[in-house]
Image (cartoon, rainbow over all chains, first blue to last red; front, side, top):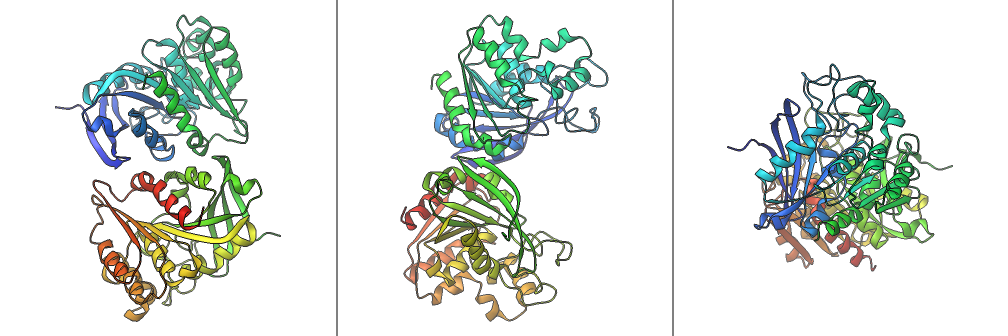
Amino acid sequence: MSALTLISETKMFNGRQARYRHFSRSTQCDMTFAVYLPPQALQGYRVPVLYWLSGLTCTDENFSQKAGAQRFAAQWGIALVMPDTSPRSDDVADAEGYDLGQGAGFYVNATETPWAAHYRMYDYIVEELPALIEAEFPVTGQRSIFGHSMGGHGALQIALKKPERYAAVSAFAPIVNPSATPWGQKAFAAYLGSDRSAWARYDSTELVQTATRTLPILIDQGDADSFYPAELQPETFVRAARARGFNVQFNMRPGYDHSYFFIASFIETHIEFHAQALGL
Amino acid sequence: MSALTLISETKMFNGRQARYRHFSRSTQCDMTFAVYLPPQALQGYRVPVLYWLSGLTCTDENFSQKAGAQRFAAQWGIALVMPDTSPRSDDVADAEGYDLGQGAGFYVNATETPWAAHYRMYDYIVEELPALIEAEFPVTGQRSIFGHSMGGHGALQIALKKPERYAAVSAFAPIVNPSATPWGQKAFAAYLGSDRSAWARYDSTELVQTATRTLPILIDQGDADSFYPAELQPETFVRAARARGFNVQFNMRPGYDHSYFFIASFIETHIEFHAQALGL
C-alpha cells in the first residue's frame, strides 16, 4: 500500500500535475506536496527530479500555479517536486507574522522549544521526501534543486552540504546569508537558539567557505525587489562562492521585483540550466 | 488627468503587468482590470489588444497569474487586457452561490431588479473598456477577444454581435448555449427576466444562426472537464457556426479538465491564433 494519499490530479502539458498528502516521520505530521510528471514519465521512462523550495507564506500551490515551469519540465522530461514550506496543522507550533512558524520553516531542523517537535524540514527535504519520491514515482536517482527567497536559501544550503546528491542548484532572489540578515536572524534565533555555530551550518555564505566539492550555481536577482539588498545580499554569496572555485552564473535583472511574475519571466532559463547539468 | 488609478505594476517578460481601478459609467461603481503591455509597447510602438474574459468566481488576477499568457504576448507584441467578471462592492447586489451576482456577471446588461443598477458588463466590455484602453495606453485600434467558460460565452457572443471590431475570437471550455444549460438559465432568468427573446441576444448558438459576417473561431475543450458536456455543449455551437460558414477550429483535448492547468497547456496556440488573425 502506498504511503501517499492523492488529493488531486490534473493533466497539464501532456503530463500530470498532482497533489499528495502523507504522514512524515521527519515532521511528525501530515505533509502535502505537489509533483509534476512530464509526458516522458507517463510513457514509461524514468526521469530525473528537480526539487523546488518555495519562499515565505507559500504552500506547494504557489509555484505549481504561477511559475509556468511545467511547460519546460515537459519539454525537457524532468519531474518537478514542490513541497510545502513547513509542517502545518492545529497541533504544530506557530507564531504571529509571516516570517516564523507555519509557512516559514526555513529548511532547518529546529532544536528549540516549541519548534523542535515538528520543524524538521531539513531532514524532510534532504532525506525523507527524495526517498519517498524515488520509491513511488517513475524517476531516476538524479536530482537537482532550486528555490525562491527562503527557498533559495534552502536550495543553496542543502546543495552546498550534499553536492554529491544534486546535479546543480539555482535560485531566484535567495536569502544567502541568513545569519546576517533580519528574516534569517529572527528565524534562526527561534529555531536554533543563540549559538551562532548552529546558524552557520545553515548559512550558505558560511558553508561555501569550507566547501570541498563544487556544483554549478545559477542565481537571478531583480534590482527592483523590495527585499533587495537588505534581506538577500546575493553579491556576498557570489563573491564567496567564486573565491572557492564555484562556477556561479549571477544575473542582475533590471526592473524586476520579488514576485512570481519575476520567476515566470526567467523560469525557462533555470530549467534549461538544470537540464544541462542533468545531462539532458 | 487620467481616469485610472494604478494599483500595482510589475515587470514581466520585459513588459509591464499592471492593475488599475477606475469609476465605470457602465456599471456605476469602481472596476478593477489588469493590463499587460509587451516590450514593444514600452519601446514606443502601438500594439493590438487581446481581451481576456474570465470565468465564474474569477477576478482580473486569475488569468494574470496562472495562464502563462504574458510569455507569448511579449513574443508576439500584443497587449493583454483582463477585466473583472462583474461589478463589485458592498453596494452592488449579490447572491448566494458562485454562479450569480458578484464574480458572475455573464457579460450581459441586466434589466431586472436588483441587478440592473450595476450589472452592465456587456456595455463595459464592448464600449467603455476598449475606449479607455485606447485612450490611455500605446495601442492600436486592432482588437481580438478570448475567454474561459463564462468568459468564453462572453467572448463568443460579443464577437458574434460585433465581428467588425475583433480580428478573431477563441475560447477554452466556453458556455455556448446558455439559454439551454443550467448556469446560463439561472443567470439569464435573474439578469434578463423570463422573456426568452432577451436571452437569445446573449446566446452564441442563437446568435450565430443569424450572423451575417464571420470571423475566425478557435475552441479548446477538455474531455475530462467536470462541466462537460452538461454546462458547455460546445459541439452544438460548432455545428451551428460551421453551418453558417464560420471557420471553426475545434480541439477536443483528451484527459484535460476545466482548470487553469488546461488553459496554460494550450495558451500558446490561442495567442498564436490571435496573432495570425491580427496580421502579426
